[in-house]
Amino acid sequence: MNFLQVVVEAFRSMNANRLRTALTMLGIIIGITSVVLLLAVGDSMKRFISAELEQLGTNMLFISPGGNRAQQQRLRNNAAPSLTMQDAAALNALPSLSGAAPVLQGGFNLSAGSETASKTVFGVTPAMFKIRNWKIDQGSIFSEADVRAGARMVVIGQKIADQFFYKTDPLGKYIRIENVAFQVVGVLYGEGKQVDGGDLSEYVVVPITAASSSLIRLPFPDNVHYVVAQGRSGGQLADAISDINETLRDRHRIKFEEPDDFRVDNLASFAETANKISTGLAVLLGLIGAISLVVGGIGIMNIMLVSVTERTREIGIRMAIGAKPRDVLLQFLTEAVAICLAGGVAGILLASAAAAGISSASDFKVEITSSAVAVACGFSTLVGVFFGFYPARRASKLLPVDCLRYE
Image (cartoon, rainbow, N blue to C red; front, top):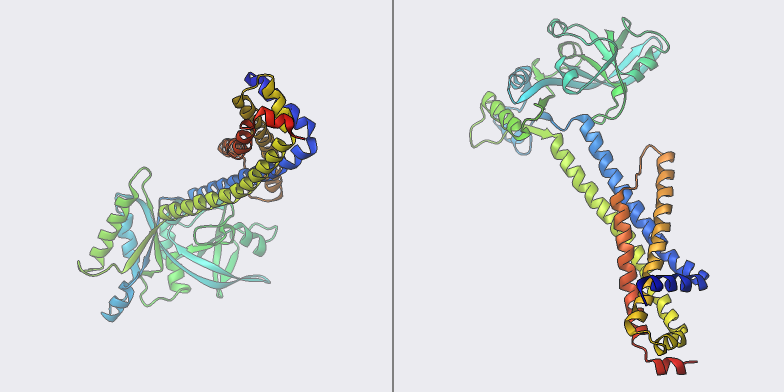
């Protein structure tokens, strides 16, 4: 028998026992659907996390005071860890950074007319808008001259504008922050979660000097809560971190044997950690789906063993008229693989429909990738070969004379 005849006989046998074939395929369909869909979910989750971090900027650095044992140690030495406006200015001058901006922030009550709300207020310099890629939808940002003058100006997010100045132009109007009037000079463009967990459309941004003099009271007027820096595009982020460490240790007069009194965090490490987690999750989901596929494979083995028993006389007749053991082996193995491949195709189609349903019903987009399809097809073939080999080999070892005696 040539291979084409073997394939034809395999499908003829499957067609003769449609219900049994369909029930056998059901386990494979469920397994393949699970593998493809779970791999797609894991891969989509990885892309989603990477896209979100890329949007935030993986070359951003956050420098904050304290860290590990440094804070307690320097407190005992009457040298509490802190960052200052001057530290930010020194970092801003580093050639490995494209900018550095100090930040003060705190929660305050906002009011305008009859509207009131409690929001986080950020005191920043104009450099922050470039570093964080904040765009302006209306008006403009405050200038360096406004920062030096401590001008009471404010840039607000779109939701804040809609809440306090519904259907009116907010520019030139006043918002009271803890009963201190700030004039609205700009409205931020866009919305969405930021790296600090806040929603861009709910941001309230004022000059850092105005925040220091009118809102946020720190022990020293030049202290800041943290500094946001940005590494230069194409530069080595490790070099930028090294320059930051060297500059701040020198400015804070930290001895060689003493730990840093500041901490530098970067989004690149967050991205790497997130990718590792999402990759591990994708593998775990794929393994869960593979378990379903193995269960389906065991079902195929059972059905094929039953089929061998039922077709014993057929096997004997084929061998009696010249079929070789390898022909019988190939026929039953082809049937097992054909069942798995047919179930695999149905599973891929079902997984694609499920992915389309998830994508249309939510903001999370699940895409079936070619790699997931290739893995599913390869795995289904392996399952067919692995679980179909034993029944096929058992059929090929039967003796024609014993088969013909079988009732």
